[in-house]
Image (cartoon, rainbow, N blue to C red; front, side, top):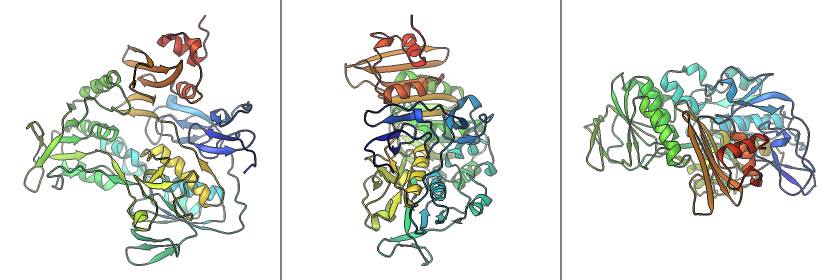
Length: 502
């Protein structure tokens, strides 16, 4: 690490680089130098990126090659949904002479990324990855595609089994850890056996939040978190069967859409006045609702389940207004909660998640945390891509190279039920100090919010081609006066593209 007082933050993954200039490419996500923002005044770099890697704008999957793949192997979007990313520079090798034993607890994307980051940083480290599931670590975000029948079980694993052996990563599957002993640096398995570590990375993930609805314990009530959850849900339903999905967030929408594709009669309960209120305003959500209804999904807005009825097996969901919805199954997707119980019992600082600093280090110096169980800067991201970035950075730190995570801008790129969406910054104006412009045409919607002639937020539905330019304009705090005061959608989009508005 340079002694320079200057630092640069990667706008894609939050990695912080210390030095006179940004790196040619981010060692975590591969973003080029142009995607780094100076933390204090200094000349910007002009190194042109060499395109040898491609990043999916929807799920963050990275593809190596001279061109993007025909379709993303993770989320299935076409080649045009990939952006160019510069070749990843090799991580700074560890200067420590000690050979560390790094134990990673959790086999999700954060855990696998931690193993990748640790191995890339330290060829000598002993790495053990522990998963509570019997399967190879897999893409959890692909479970709804598996439920829809778009892919099979063989498409879920992140890496083949041979990859772990080739990278000298010991993978322990189906192992439950019941205790962390911080003083002796060891973990305890359910059978009483112990495993020592020099550095421990907690990537324990999260569990579904099940609201206290009477009857939620009945047979036929499901959540979607594991392969077994998907298998059990599909075995309980047949074409034409009624299913009630409680929760209109991203996972609830994807689950409802997957079931509808299988011919299931789906009713979706949304407690708010419209779908995805954290990502969209009412106008944008209306376009999404149209797509949902076209799939044959019935939407009940501002509807809450009062109870789930039936003997041992689910028979119906009763709403607070007394409406009774027949159901052969109920799927609850009302959010997640961090798996922080082991850390809490071990005495680590825990709030919403396991509290970590910029090195993703917990209150115990030998233990890091990343992904859905980690709380950084007061925030638990709960999203796949930040979990991947945090895991990689935690692995680098555990391997002996001090690496900062500076947080990621509140930006969401989605493809929900085939509809592309992007949201950034402020979605709904807080007061009269904002200027809002919008346009709706040909099934697309664009909305931009400004404050003091600077972009404060954006929503794009359908056509998201200007998402990256909008994100950079907001993060850099550019003065948008050149687009007009006030701007129009057309003049501002010319400004984003760098076109002449003469």
